[in-house]
Image (cartoon, rainbow, N blue to C red; front, side, top):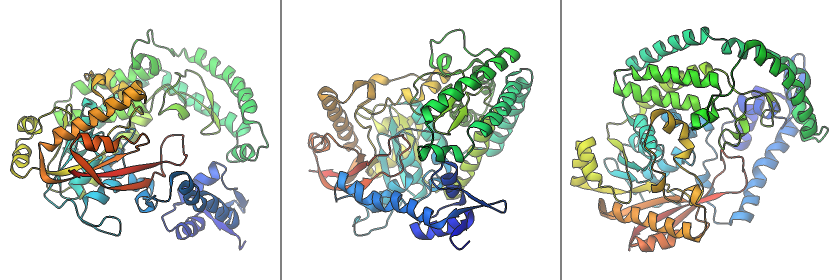
Length: 525
């Protein structure tokens, strides 16, 4: 027993070994997904210390060496923030809604706060300063500015992005919010109880559990796959077909309508009929809410909920491929999974989580001003827009000007920023401005796209300079594999005074290969 550890003991050992928090959930994940072997003794779970040590050696110590060989010796590992748990990099309101391409709050804080070290040799912003993020996205910079006692202005071409950002930094009437959520939830349950899709899903879940326990026992099945003792593709296909017969009989028994009558819109194509009915029900309830702020924050909850209920596989949730209406073998979970037939569980989970996160942020909030403008950063007159939306902030910009910029511009040819929230645009009727996106995926990464990108980013910087102090500091986070940012700086009348190259360790995409981004420090020529 000397070489065996309980899950709790393993988490303590791993935390000391890696010099960062490792929870019991982290250890359980390694067991569940077959990374380390589960040893059962006296009805308890143990793991072998040597196996755990070897896993972390191969996973962490070699990583730095391999990444340096690929990305170069100038990686700043301090900026990897590898010591933080996911719950810390997605703290409080930062996870009110999913968003592709956002940076973690610790990176923003590193450059906005008042610390110095051997890499960051001076303080760029102080309390009371105004910081600008002309590519605001989901508002990470605005939230962190608030925490640090800075005023902040964001700009984003996407109306929905601006809504997410402003809901994160707004003060909310939690009593009114909770009251309306509870009322909607009760009415949703009553709506569901009149239908049979909820009972169908419970029956289906029970059938799946029995089937998966027999043919895909966890974690034994995953270890067999990892050790190449079973051909995952052939075995999974056989069992997928086997369970499909049961599924089709249940569909017929409960008379479940899967497809909608048309597939003209995103909502028509990517949601099963029972889910779509529930979406429409809550959306109708939403219209009846009188408090505008409450209506907006519940809209964010509804959007977050329906994103998790799309008719696709678990592996393809971030990048949709084909809509799914049947049970299927899920490579991510190593078992037969299913599409959703009710969104009640996700709705209840996210309503609770949203209130909890808002409460957490309220404890950290400072008495400062933040606002995200929905507009084109190349042309928008910040003072004029704020004069209508946030008069005091407009006066503050005129009085003291903006101290600098911290932002992550879109990466050329990587993401279609409107399309990632297509479900929300369909449901809420926001006007799409795809043609005004800089460097969208649909334009690719060819020469013409890169030249357009350089022009677009430089025009944003030129427009921003009108509102900045003379001795400004601009920090732009980018993966500049085409070496465009020196040209961007030159066209904007700026020069690069420093670069910080950070390894990006915790990416949400399937691609976990070596990846780095550069924080460019721009100043006036």
